[in-house]
Length: 255
Image 1 (cartoon, rainbow, N blue to C red):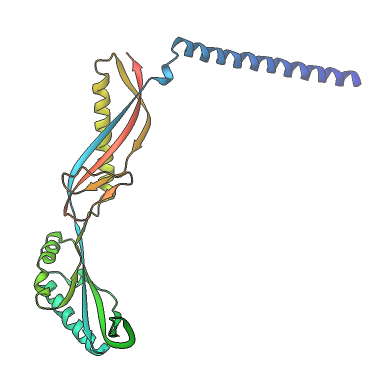
Image 2: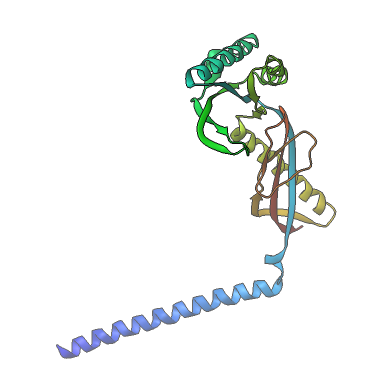
C-alpha cells in the first residue's frame, strides 16, 4: 500500500515538473519573439501623428429672456402698492402691444423696502418716511426678435416717469446637445483630412486612432476670437458663432 502511494506521488510530481517546464519554455518563446519584433522596428510603438481639427458654425438663438423690475413708492405700503400696480399695469400693456402671450410673461414676488428719515447730517434714523415695493416681470419667449425690439423701446415707459429698471436681454440656443454631436463630427473629419494631407507624400499611411480629446464648445459673438479653457457661452447676441476643437492621435503605418 505504502509503495503504491509513493509511486502515485512520484507520478504527480513528474507531471507537475513537466508542465512547469513547458510553460517556462512557452513564456520564454513569447518574450523572445516580442523582443525580437521591437529590435526589428524599435520605434514602431512611437510612430504616431497628433493633429487638431476644428469646426465653426453660425447659429441663431431660439429663446430670449428679459427681466424688467417695476417699483412704486408711497408714504405707506398701501400707497406704494398702488404706485407699483399702476406701473406694472402699464408694463403689461406694453408687453401685450408687442404680442407676448400671458404664458411668456411671469411675475416675481413683491419685495418691500422701508425708507428712513435722515437727520441733519444725512444719516438714517429709526423713523420711517415711506415705503418702496418692487416686483420683477420676466419675458421668456422664442420670439427673440420681438424680445430685442421690446427691450429697445422700453425707454418710452421710463419717459412716462414710471419707476422701471430694464435688464439686458439674454439669448440662448436650446439645442446645444444635438449641436455638440454635429460639431464633434465635423471637427473630427477636419482632423482626419489634415492627417491625410500630412502623410500624403510621406510614404506612409494613417492607422488606428490612439487617442481622442475634445475641447469645450466656444459660443461667442459673431466673428469673435475669444476662447476660454472652461468654454464661453455668450448670451448678449441673437446670432452666435459656435467653435469646436478635436485633437486626435493616429498610428502611422508603413506602405
